[in-house]
Image (cartoon, rainbow, N blue to C red; front, top):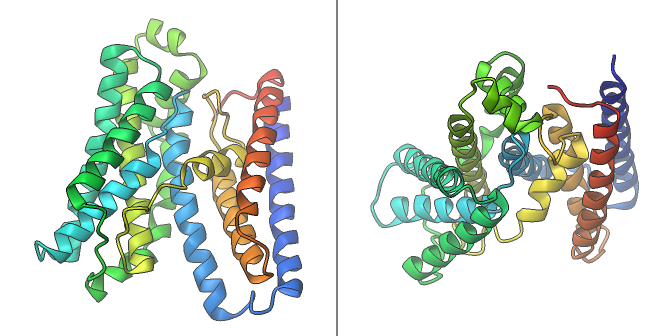
Length: 307
C-alpha cells in the first residue's frame, strides 16, 4: 500500500470519527436532534449535499472546476417547476426535461473549455453568471410553488445512484480515463486518449448531477425558488475535498464525499437546533476547505494518485 493510499484511509477513518462525534454531541446538546422528523430531514438534506458534492467531484477528477454547479441546479429546478406548474407536464416528464437541460448546460461548459482552451475556472464562472441571469430574467424572480404532490417522492430516490459512482471509477473505462486526464492531461493526450471527449462527458455528468440536486431540493421544499443553488459553491468543494478527492485531479473518493456530505448536513442541522447562528457554517466551510487544500498537497507529495 502506497503512502498516499494509507493516508487516504486514515483520513476517511478520521472523518467518520469526527462525524460520529458530532452526532453524539448534538444528540446530547440539541433537543430533538434524534427525533424521527429531524433525522429524516437531516438525512434528506445530507443526500442533497452529497449529490452537490458528486457534481463537483466528477469535474475535479479531471483537474477541472465547475463553478456553475449552483447556477445549473437552480436553473434546472426552475425549469422543472415551470414545466409542472404552467405547462402541466407530468412530474416524470418534467424531471427528465430538467435533467436533460442540466446535462446540456454541462456539455455547453465543456464545449467552451475545449474550443477556447480557456481554463475551466473562467469558463464556468462566466456561464454561472449567464445561466443565473437568464433564469432570473425569464422567470422575473418568481418562485413556482404549485408543484404536484406526486413530485415530492423524487426526494426519496436520491441514494439510488450512489453505486453508479463506485462502478464508474472502479470498473468503467470512462472513469479510468477521467482519472488519467486528471493525473496528467498532457500524458493522457500523448497516449492517444481523446481528452476533449472525456472533458465533454465529465461536464455533462456534472451538469446532470447538479440538476438532480436541484430537483431533490425543490421536491423536499415543495417550491422552486430563484435563490436555489446560490449557496452551493463552497459546499460543493468541501464535501469531496474533505473526503479525499484531490483538488488537482487524478483521484476521487466516493465514500469520502458521502461522509463529507453527511458531516456538513449534521453540523448545519445541529447548529440550528442548539440556537447558534447558521452563518457560522460558512466559517466552518472556509476553514475546512483550507485544510483540504493542505491535505491535497500532502497527498500529492506522498504519491497519492490513483482511483
